[in-house]
Image 1 (cartoon, each protein chain N blue to C red):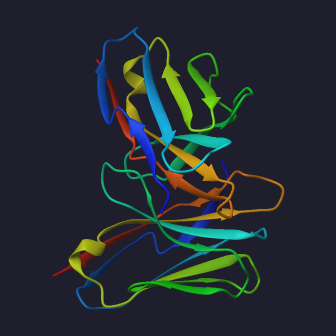
Image 2: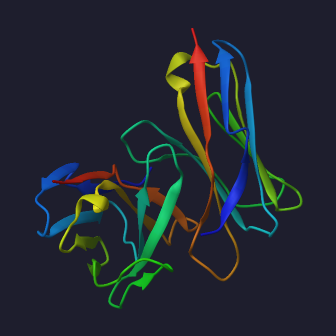
Length: 111
Length: 116
């Protein structure tokens, strides 16, 4: 099925560094969601965005709904080892309940 | 946040048998639930959309007679893998849409199925 382009695919960073990842789409979305998935578990919702330009924080995490409504960004500040995992974005267009998922960003934090 | 519970967390079954996986929304009503399959190191692959009180909508390439979905109540959807084969071994995840919460979807913990 259709997937969003998520970048980067993977990244190794040092503990304490900031992390940025993004998702882009060729179509407009009305909702963007960001999830984190630990190995062998289901994705856990991190941040939900419902309005273009919206900037929302959840602790060290900040996500933004792009003005064009075709992209979204997730930033993690001062990364810690437990930030390791796979981060997925999900976008919802109009007239549907089916979310489109990003390909995922694998984050590895070096202590 | 909202809670979605999936059961069992893992199951081992013999080839040819059927396995049922349950997905429950614990603190909200979910008129729509989704079932996914996830292969190692890959993103979620949507299998079907489960609608309360009506037939599920299957994605292209997913056999509806093999993956039976029932959404009998606003808080429960079940996925039954019929006549399971080893190639059906996978991680299956459900999600539920909170229609009162901005259409946000919440995921279950996932179920590991191993067919031997």
